[in-house]
Image 1 (cartoon, rainbow, N blue to C red):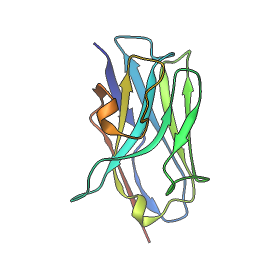
Image 2 (cartoon, one colour):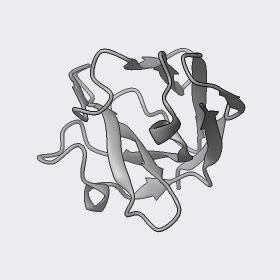
Image 3 (cartoon, rainbow, N blue to C red):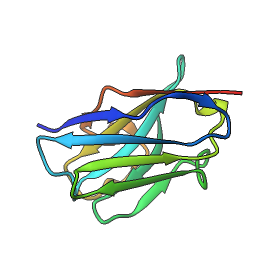
Length: 125
């Protein structure tokens, strides 16, 4: 069983930067498909960024050029570097994983098996 624990959420002004972390335990996620999702109140959970077991990345159009997903294999930790933050980025951010190297729809929540509890990001104008 994989456990995921997010951290790094905060409240900040628009234009700022933040790095979210997702520490994995219970299994080594080096070859897993992993992703970051977010959910604002009243909205569906949406995919933000994904990283497959081969290192390929995928981003939602709304965050391209501003967010970067990466993984530290030695620390079994997934990151999301968020720059040029906007008020519309405000949401609970979740880390997700699935124990296979590649998924066909990496930004779809139904593709993932394991989820963290989330970390809140609030961006004010």
